[in-house]
Image 1 (spheres, rainbow, N blue to C red):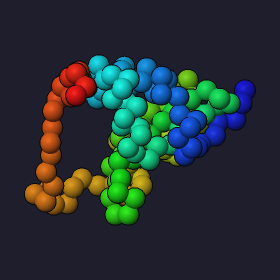
Image 2: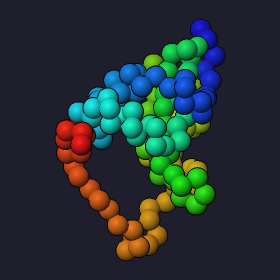
Image 3: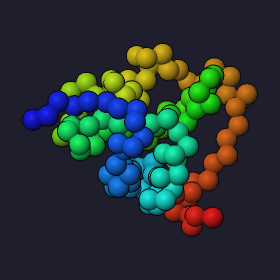
Image 4: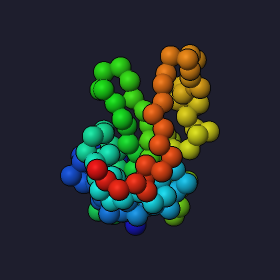
Length: 123
């Protein structure tokens, strides 16, 4: 068995594997491969790899200076329990351990929410 490694190198990301996993989740069921690829291209991403196989992923939407939003975090079931979740901040209950809290001033944030965005045709 190969050791699992983490990489910020976007060329290592397996878009097909990421898309395949994301389509099985509650937050992005029906997402198109094109939307996944564009989301990744506009974000800072980390991949978890066992050899060349992608086994985990996390995406930061960020200005790279003052703000980051953590999204699309996963570790394949067969690779959970190895510390990858902690390394990539997987699962809501782990966020608090790393200082994440609910918004302190939600009245200062706005949301543009389109619940069917992943099912909509790409414009």
